[in-house]
Length: 51
Image (cartoon, rainbow, N blue to C red):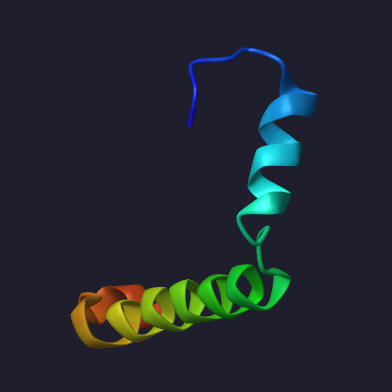
């Protein structure tokens, strides 16, 4: 990608290369939330669950 600061040009080049994926963004967000919840459950100290 060229070193351009014009957002419209960057967006056009990205669209020409296939664009972005909303599915990927949503799945990535869900996975990060699940990973965070799992790590909280596994590694939280005992007092954390009493509060």
